Length: 146
Image 1 (cartoon, rainbow, N blue to C red):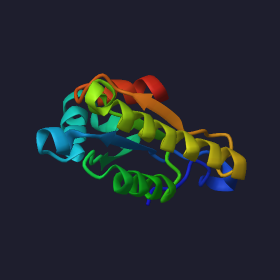
Image 2 (cartoon, one colour; image 1 turned 90 degrees about the horizontal axis):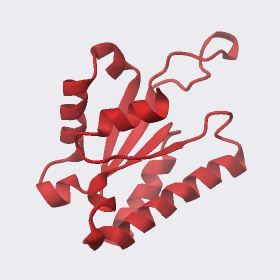
Image 3 (cartoon, rainbow, N blue to C red; image 1 turned 180 degrees about the vertical axis):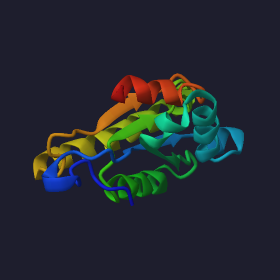
């Protein structure tokens, strides 16, 4: 597990990678794990130094089991202190998945609120991001984190 942003000497900020969870329908729609799309976009568009600044992980949505997928997403959101959550275009850009998209965003917002209420966010709030497609993951992340 990567150190948190305040694990430096005497509580100073470290250069720990930003943890980003990318939520996608890639497996359902294209038969490939979202991790494949993450790796492809980062390998093509980011230098090794840029890549080292981020810990990108994926979460595959299953629209055939909305309740199960939302429960698993809630668990995943709470398993670590994510710096960012990126919701992919597949769920947001297809009207067939509008209700699922709304439920996913609501689950992420509940996590943001939970962290703010219990103070676990400190001064580093979770960033909610939206991409324009599988070839926009790097751009979306840089847009949010610089």
